[in-house]
Image (cartoon, rainbow, N blue to C red; front, side, top):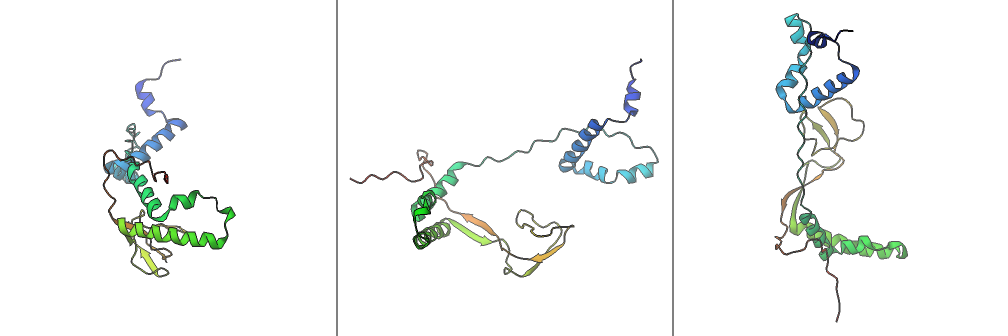
Length: 196
């Protein structure tokens, strides 16, 4: 049997597995290449106007890897340390509460709440994401910030969306954590205490 010629290979229909590879490549390339996405969006119109059979697309470029920011654990550890210092949050969370009454737990929770509130007010400026009152009707136009607004309930179709605001959301508009000395060990959330 003769080996297929390069022209015959070009005209041959791609296998099912190759079509999957092409589909994924086109999908990811559409995110990173607006011109490519525009051509894909208009491929039927382009083929009809040119009155030529659709040519096989060029092999897709491999998708560019998403570069994730690495969060420094120091800020998170520092916040935990502040919540322990002023609210005894870690002590409360690590305690086995099964031996305590609901009244005792409620009294402890009040102390933890007051301390947490103090830390938040002292080190953050926290504002609502939405200015409307909870329960009010809102309209989310096309292109709304999906990172700031989460749709819940029966989500179908596309924007604009009309719904009821069930939670205003929170956003940190300012962070004022104390600066750390280079020698500070942020992993020590609360030092051990030894009474003499």
